[in-house]
Image 1 (tube, rainbow, N blue to C red):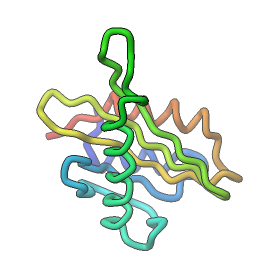
Image 2 (cartoon, rainbow, N blue to C red; image 1 turned 180 degrees about the vertical axis):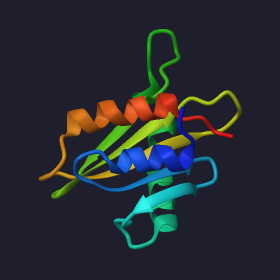
Image 3 (spheres, rainbow, N blue to C red; image 1 turned 135 degrees about the vertical axis):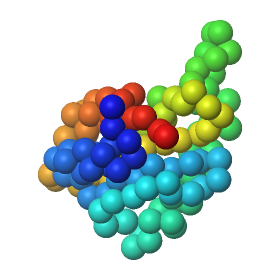
Length: 127
């Protein structure tokens, strides 16, 4: 079971990965990051990703379900030359974490990257 550094290292091994980060979206802080940030600054990237996550979490449209409980699994944002995958991480403590992967569209496989990122999020051990 990998920790933060190992998890991010494995995320960077995904074909087409440009950057990866673990973000606490309650505070907007990057708990770890690797690669080249899309903005040139990992802290700015974490803050902007936090804004996107909060908008999705706070919107009733994206969390609506018959039972009233539908936790988000991930967010996929497509851009001209890249994808941004934000995978929510379940924790045993009161924390709000997402694993962010910036993926080159020409070199990456969105479906494969999503599957691998979800697997890494499930294996992540924080401590």
